[in-house]
Length: 617
Picture 1 (tube, one colour):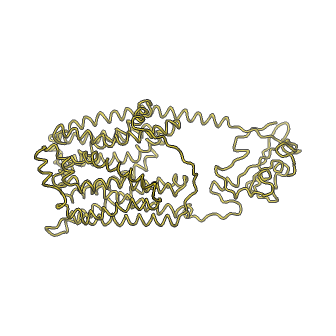
Picture 2 (cartoon, rainbow, N blue to C red):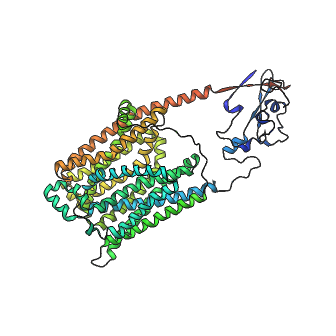
Picture 3 (cartoon, rainbow, N blue to C red):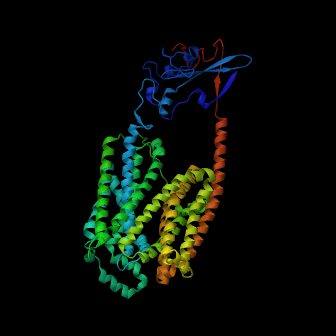
């Protein structure tokens, strides 16, 4: 009689077994350790040692399990399994090996890495929130500038400097060690922000070519106010770009590159989501910090530049946090052992822009996914820049503007923290399709309310006056709500949906599709909104005159976004069903025949065989 057992029944080995689990014998090698005849002839004793757990006998190397088959001829099957190594791989200590000390269920060795990494992440994002709020205050509220500068700044200054930095970073990575590369990148950021607060900003009136910018503005006309403002306040624009690069370079390249270097996959699955929650805690605290220092002006005497005092204080905090990041990085490198990894490198497909475009067009699934990415980038930029122009009108001074941005950052952190807690319930209860449509729906509803207050606010004046608000203030609050809820939905729902959409694809489409979207769609989404606004400003003379058309463009883009999400949901669900069916078929087909023995112990494995000709070896 032949018994059929699933693959786990006969021999289950961990993916990377440790050498401690097998106790190799120098003279007899692998054949001795995996001798089925010995296991079956004396199943309860191997190598003179026997251990008993839950009715099964276990040694350091092998485990035997009796399986009784009831029938006409009563038979017993003994299976030998290498489970000690598997127990080690599952976090259980080997026989004779001490369990590593733990605190609240987490090994102290792991905590030694995760806690400093979390502190590093907190400091980086604390700085990023301060820099993000400050950069907007500088370029929007500066004399001779407005929110119209942002589209030109993102396209013609930020993008070229980002490309130049990545080229330089690639060259440095070839000649410097990882430690030297980290310090070579982060220390110039720290030095610049310290120098800006104490040197560049106090002497900005001497280094900015204000007269030249005024003359060019008189010649070219007011529609070129945005591009000329870049020349007029070049040091503020440089701060804007450095603050943007802090987010993409220090967070994405330096921190996550280092975190992936020193953590294992299991640790990443367990603790990386907590970093996301910690990021929003940093957002709340840094928002309160910006709010506090923006209020310093109220306690200063007449004639004192309150914004300069606030800026020095905030840049001092940024510098201190920067040095704390460097210290934590140094400590981790000198106190934590790096996990061993395979040296085999996976080749990534390098696709040019034209190749990426062709691949996008050829696949409907990738095309819909690309639409989601591009639509988000354009939509958030269309509303954000218009909102910041109204924000300057409501809060014209730097301290007032900065104070409001501090409250805005705090509210964004709280909303995102809450949405991250709710996101898992949304995915489990309503599925991928509903989660993917929440972000565009929120952006559409709040966008309609925002543009309606701007375009049709006059009839609402009496009603808003009862609540102590003007149409401008109401538009600022609605725009803030739009940004808060859109960004919180993006971080908690849109990003996970986008990454999940790659999972059911075949390997070739998955890798090439992600490469195509990285090359084409991310830059297009970020700069698409800026290019549209530049065209509108140069055509209609100002951002205010372009508002009705921007509202119409937003509506069209969000509707296309919703259509792509619905189409992608159907394809995603179909692929998931196919994948689940294939897995079920694989599980059903993975059967391994095991030769049985009767009560007398007679079995082909108990006699001499071609695999074990000596029998007693």
